[in-house]
Image (cartoon, rainbow, N blue to C red):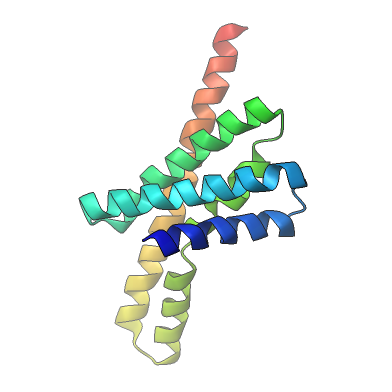
Length: 141
């Protein structure tokens, strides 16, 4: 579990480097990804649901990114895009294509549907938090 969290930190950190994030923000990006993955692992242990775990983790990553964006006076995308990287269902997409190449269409449909669900809940979580931010701006005006 510790190795997974450290791996999530470095994956997020180096994706942030790839996205040309300033050096001062790289550690924060790595922490967002690592904490998001820690939350994913914790929720998955409790619920045993990949979809729910991804949703809660994406919510937390979105919240952390919003807070850091305000504190560091940076765009939210600086923290959000690299922070979401550990949750992206790359393994599921790989398994989908592998099953299709082996003409195991039942397995391909399962992994494909699961990958789409994960991508969907990540997007919903981001939009959910973004809508709260939009609503709070409208109330203060």
